[in-house]
Amino acid sequence: MIDVRPATVFEDVRAVIGPKKPTSTVCFCLSYRIPSKLNNTLRGPERSEYVEKLCKEKPAPGVLAYDGDTPVGWAAIAPRAATTFARNRKIPHVDDLPVWSLWCIRVRPGHRGQGISHALIAAAVDFARTNNAPVVEAYPLDNGDTKVDLTMAYAGLRKNFEQAGFTKSADTTSTLAGHPRILMRLDLR
Image 1 (spheres, rainbow, N blue to C red):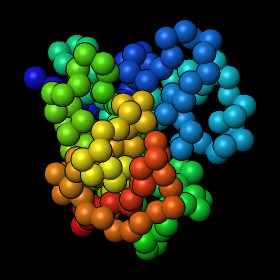
Image 2 (image 1 turned 90 degrees about the horizontal axis):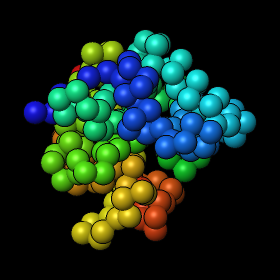
Image 3 (image 1 turned 90 degrees about the vertical axis):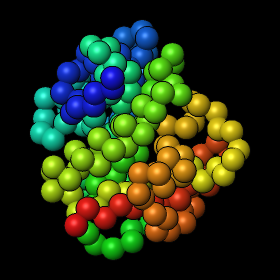
Image 4 (image 1 turned 60 degrees about the vertical axis):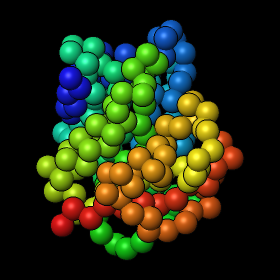
């Protein structure tokens, strides 16, 4: 049974999206969350410390999926205004609503193919709704039936968002792993 809840336990967030070696500089789901200059200056343990601080804030930086007590999945979601999507030139703004962005979905190896990404999307939407978001946006790959390298599928796939009730709102000029990204939205009002 998969349970998804706000990402408030840093050790669990680290288990899903953190580096294997604490000194490594990996995304840690910060590249769209913080300004590029800050993102480029945070190295190794500084990234962990930053994410640990985020886990203590309200709202939490995303949601985590658990299989029993084991963290197995992550979805990053936050108000768009608090992310780099607020200023991203490749992803358009459809309107002036204070939308929330859902930009990263990660399921740990060994737990894929069990519907966890679908549970993460649904829980992220519920999390945004609980925090009074009027709309949730996502920027998934529009890959059709083409296989996507799993390391680049973090943005999600169009079909998964369609299954969650999202609809395409706009094209973008962003690509990832050779696939166009589209802007999809789910109205929560």
